[in-house]
Length: 330
Image (cartoon, rainbow, N blue to C red; front, top):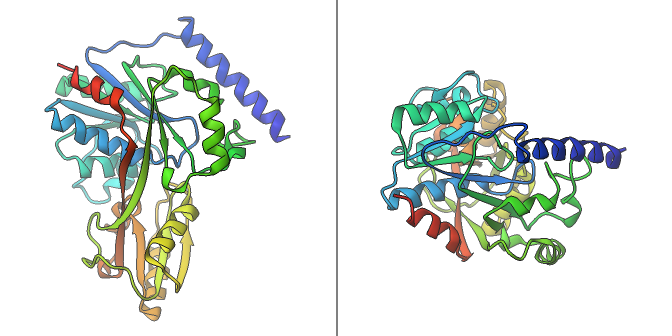
């Protein structure tokens, strides 16, 4: 059944792509350079740290930049600029756009149900030199000048099928649309996936390779940089389990309890109270990601219980073609 459903999903996806490539559905050209950062999979490739890195690289070059994103699971509909200073901003605008706005206050971030509407608003207000589309690889409505595609090499090769058989939104052959392919999570690479991707990816498209390291820091929480004693791990990520394993291995954590929630989870007061009560009884720290902390910080009465884990990227093979693209923008 999964194989049949995957075939139907792939047929529909291919049809949509062909309609855009033949001009039946039209893409819009906007008057600035457009860079898309996206996935083939439904999430979990480490896209948000890469988008954050791109914004910082643009700022280094003094490029007037706007980022647009879909307001996924946000409470406020319509097209808005993210104001990360308002209470419960992550609930209002979406967690990832709010995190990116908070980490890059110089860059206007706009969200909407339709990314092209967010782009239109950003252009009208700021007239940027560079527009960054968050999760834009399948967004054909806007023409782009640089397509950055992320592929997670830590996943098992069996995941590299179209959903529901695997986790891909479209088949691996769609990587041919990329201007640069970035292989992510190299520090935990799956040997078979690494080998198969090397064999399967188009030879004419440049590749870059990056890994991620974890540090205690981010926004708020307890100030200590060490993790010791009993801990409670609380996470709402696409791949919370693999993130938890990385944290446990890095800090040699032995005493722990896990609270795992779906990706983009909106925490309730009841859930937070249960977690904090258990932490208080066990005299434990609560470990959370930055993405979850920007939601929790507006709800907790005990920020001292938390330690925030930040994901930092490093390049094993630098993205030279991306540097060249950014350098040529006037």
